[in-house]
Image (cartoon, rainbow, N blue to C red; front, side, top):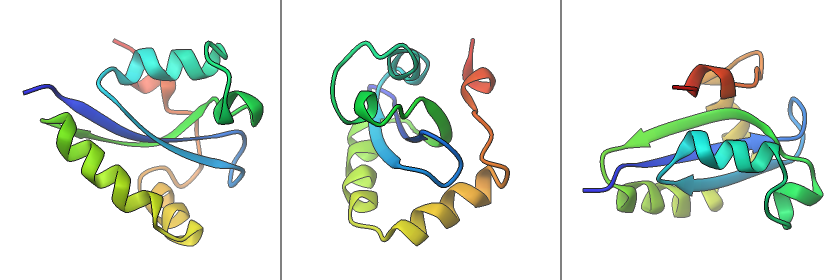
Length: 96
C-alpha cells in the first residue's frame, strides 16, 4: 500500500480553497509555498495548509477527494474549523 494525504490550502483565512491529494504532504505543500508549478494554487497564492487527513492507501484519499470536490464551500469551512479553528498554517506541524 502507498499512503496518501488529502489536504486543503488557502491564500488567507476563509479565502480561496484548494483541495488536493498527494503521497508526500510535506513535499507537496513545499511546492505550493514555493510556486513550483503554474496553475490554480500559484495564481491564487494558495500556500497555507489549513486542513489535512492521512490515509493508509492513496486510493482512499483519492476517493475522499472526489467527495470533497462536490461539497459546498460552507461544509469545507466547517471541516477546516473543526481541526483548525484559527486557520493557522499547519505546514510547520507536518515537517519531519
